[in-house]
Image (cartoon, rainbow, N blue to C red; front, side):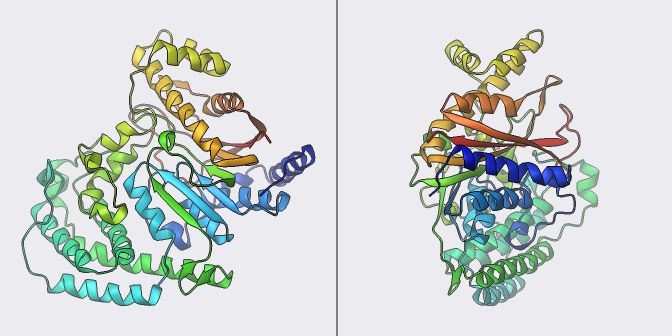
Amino acid sequence: MIISTPQTDDRLRMRLSRLTQRDEDYWSFKDSRREHGHGLFQYPAMMVPQVARAVLREACKVHPKIDSVGDPFAGSGTILTESMFKGLAFTGTDINPLAILLCRVKAGPFFVEALDEKATDILAQIDEDSRWALEVNFPNRDKWFEKDVLISLSRIRRAIVSEGSAWARRFFWICLADTVRLTSNSRTSTFKLHIRPAEQIEQRDANPIAVFRKAVTRNLQHMKDAAERLANEGYLNRGHYLGEVNIVLGDTRRIEPAGLCDIILTSPSYGDNATTVPYGQYSYLPLQWMELSDIDPHIDADTLRSTCEIDSRSLGGSKRVSAVERESLVDRSRSLKRYLERLRNQPPDRAKRVIAFFRDLDACFPAVLRSLRPGGLMAWTLGNRKVGGKRVPLDTILSELLENHNAQLLLKMRRKISSKRMAPKNSVAETMSSESILVMRKAA
């Protein structure tokens, strides 16, 4: 629970501003590494843990009674892990099942000795399996995987399915997800599904079992490190995290909050697939190999209907925009109106992309704010991408829209991107070299 006053606002601004006064590149965290649970899987465009850690630390200095954190776009669970390291309750939502899987594993339980023994058993079972039967079938399966890779992945899948504990299976599904990503015929140089050149596929010597073994060894160490840190802080009891963690698979626009949090830390996706990361495409092949019910028992069977299904359900996924929706947005954001005027002479689909994204993002705000206590804080990490060669002022537009939902901007900070895994260019435009961190407060 937090109490907001003009004095607390001034203290928070002062503490955060002082960090950049001492070092103008403070928020870049150039030498950051993904340790503990943060390193379990290479999810696209992951938030830098040190950014979340610093914002949370300073917020808790000003508001010592903060006890719960929310993330409406939970992704790989960076905010979840940082919240746990401070002993705080956490609620997270994401529309991508792979993101929910990552969050659920990072939330525990941390039965590391049992997990070590189960890993030994599963790896032995894989080595003993000589069957050639293929365990999955989906459209274009043989395009994305060579026959010998399919056989090896099937042996790994059979071993995981034979494991009796769902919490352990989820850990091994992550290891398999990494294996699928690295041994499929899709290029690893992009997050989109792009087939490798035929000659490159022919020359590859992919070894899924070796890759899986390496992933298991690495991830076991990450789980042990996370468990040790949580135990040292006094936040574990017999392998279970003492705080409350609630992970929800679903659309933030349509989910009613299960409870109230004191602070929201988040980084939403930055637009449609033409200008940002296609999380759904990236997740499509790994999810084909999993028992989806292990992720969520109520998962929609149509989630993997196509390679673009998850992305089509995400922010900006539908480009059908009505005149009423457009007018409603530009009436509440002068910056969006000015930006759309700059796109006037460009193909109409570019303006539609931008409007569709902000329509969907704006539709999230009522639910986001309902999950936040009066006077609660928000920290949004945002990148301003280009559409049609014009930089979208996402940070300014977001703050204007949120102000219409009765929120106040306290401070905007800039950080250079040094370690976020993202190519400097893609086929559409230059990607971001910096991000903004908007610190806002819900009206009390």
